Figure (cartoon, rainbow, N blue to C red):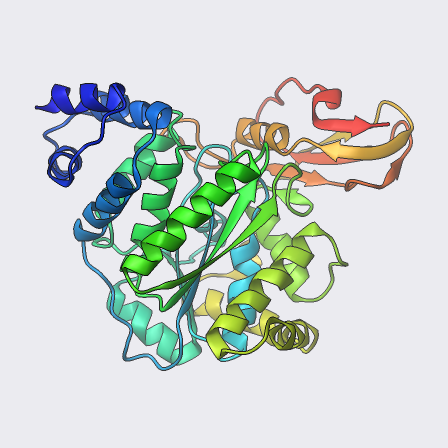
Length: 408
């Protein structure tokens, strides 16, 4: 039956709930091998799934573990998820902002997928930060300080954990049905009342066209309706890295600068304000314009930054432990002109090559390395100007400046 199911999907045929349940639970239980699931996932990438298959797979994922219940916590619980992008550290900024405005934030985040870094990996660059809270610890912390950012609890959608890890190393991360099932199963099982999804589009994202982003958005909204959850989606650009930094410690440090109000308006800051405003609008049932005013005030009066520090300390982290490598390498402009584009995918590959992410499941992440951009798109540059600084602890990969930076 195992080979029959793989072959059926290879031929693009629709699978029943029973067939999907047998196959995925067989993998979770160890009866189906990595190479068999890998073949199936690749067939899904090539042939897709019907909506009914996606709905079935989402339910199978949810039913593989526990569903969290936070009805005893006052307020509307609004969760946010990003489909991932190069330099996407928005959760580190928007979660403290939203929580500082009295909206409970219970954020269960993931690790890196493909070239994109994961929020949990970034937070683990803070020495002592505990990403493995139990449900009891989550509830207590939210009641105490109004915010938690942690990894999935052990029993929350265990199916997704094993499939997520396999997708990461088998080039099957971009399948819309698999993305939708993965995201929505975790969001629904996590107990949120309302869900905001930031869908990244571009060469540095899992989704590379607006058409696919719209398809994913529609699919997740449909899944939300099945479980009586309001789902909103924002489609944002990921052809250019988000902000200045790519790499775990570097990104946390940049997020801190934004929370302190030390970053001027740029694509990252503007997106954080937009996402936070959407969440506050949903959580307080107010207009987005009114919500935006509250968000900006939270940054300006220090409430957002203070909430972030409170979060880190509550989960055992030492913010002073953040460090980056002392070894640096400069990428310099080879001509005069205007910086027209920064290729997000190439920056992601470069960061991964430095050790900021994983090529294989067993790889260890170096939290101190990464890429810090010195120039953003639209700025004038002169030959010899430093376009980016690499923080390194290993041999530097071959770099083609013209593949990463477009100067005209």
